[in-house]
Amino acid sequence: MVDHDLIGTVVAVQANFYQVCLENNSTQFLLCTRRTRLKKIGQKVMVGDRVIVEEPDWQDSRGAIAQVLPRTTELERPPVANADIILLVFAVEEPALDPWQLSRFLVKAESTTLELCLCLNKCDLITVEQRQQWQGRLKQWGYDASYVSVIQQQGINRLWERLQGKITVVAGPSGVGKSSLIRTLIPTIDLRVGKVSGKLQRGRHTTRHVELFELPGGGLLADSPGFNQPDLDCLPRDLARYFPEARIRLQKATCQFSNCLHKDEPNCVVRGDWERYEYYLDFLDKAIALQEILQKQPDRESNLKLMVKRSGKSQYEPKLQTKKYRRTNRKTKHQNLQDIYETQLQEETEDS
Ligand SMILES: Nc1nc2c(ncn2[C@@H]2O[C@H](COP(=O)(O)OP(=O)(O)O)[C@@H](O)[C@H]2O)c(=O)[nH]1
Ligand SMILES: [Mg+2]
Ligand SMILES: [Zn+2]
Image (tube, rainbow, N blue to C red):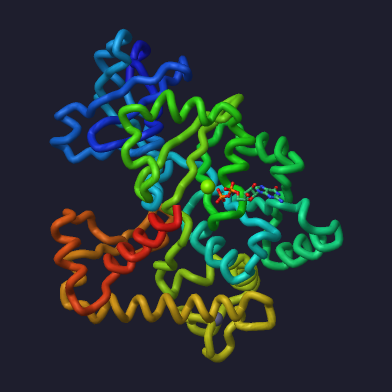
């Protein structure tokens, strides 16, 4: 990297085009292609990537991506590089806050290395006492949420301050007010959608499409349909560390067995009377079932790889496959992980 290099952040990807927002001039977007050299070395370009742009054509707002700078983080679904925060949005009412569903999202968020910011919206629909009840309950779980009302503009400023200068991925079920919140945080978003998408318009509403929008004052925000129905694909032995309640217990003491799954093993320090222990058991059953499906597959080596993340966590990930291969796969009798992903993708597409 040299001084005069043009550096920018990829804010949208569609087919072989990358919309790049330049670092020293965030109102300037260049529609870029990827240098053949990058293709040859198999260098993927993701939304959120910081890139070096060459041969800018200022007249037509075009350019070419010559280099991808090292990533700090990498989310697979939605595919976003360098994200700092997962902003998990739920509503306290309409739809009623479902602790099991919330826990599913929390576990999924915990399984990334990103900072978690839990935001409970629609506080205008409950009393102060009801809010305090949630506050106390979530404290027990290990979470400090931001309580907001987008409609009444309550708590928005503090949230905005927390997201300053960060890359944030917004997640949460539909109907909780994510779009309303994003529109409040970024009042010009509708203009920007028209301005930048243009050529990238097609597919804007599909699950795989992610786009980053600039927060006033700095920072980027992604609305992420790919995170709407999180699947729990973590390994059974990793699950406990995604529950703060279990983490605390494991910090203070040790189970008798080093491979304890905290189910019915003797002298387990995690098992106990904490509210979400039953969710832990439920998610554990699902994680074990998924692991069994994967182990029964004779060809699992061919379409799955065990990813060991920087944090030391491991996770099954489907390898990238061609569409053609996926289609043949769907016809096979046994439901494999790829199918589960596919089904889910369909649900999400219908959902959004
Ligand atoms: N009462 C109340 N309704 C809200 C609030 N924020 C959003 N809504 C409503 O919730 C519904 C869903 O909002 P939307 O932003 O589309 O949710 P999304 O599906 O998560 O993107 C809309 O009818 C909004 O007007 C809020 O703070 N209070
Ligand atoms: Mg929405
Ligand atoms: Zn245990």
